[in-house]
Image (cartoon, one colour):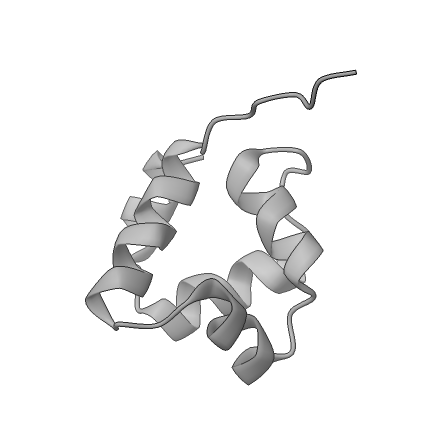
Length: 73
């Protein structure tokens, strides 16, 4: 059985870029802001649309402008 390969959503790409700019791993980010890593990954890969609570934290803490976040949905 092979694992399904998923691609990052446009929001996921935006988040990854911000993490790189901040020189922070997604694990560090999740631990710092109490976001379950599995939920974080599900949001970035579009498995779930993003529990509004976690998506809001990600946008706020990474300083993603609201209009960029909306375009990346």
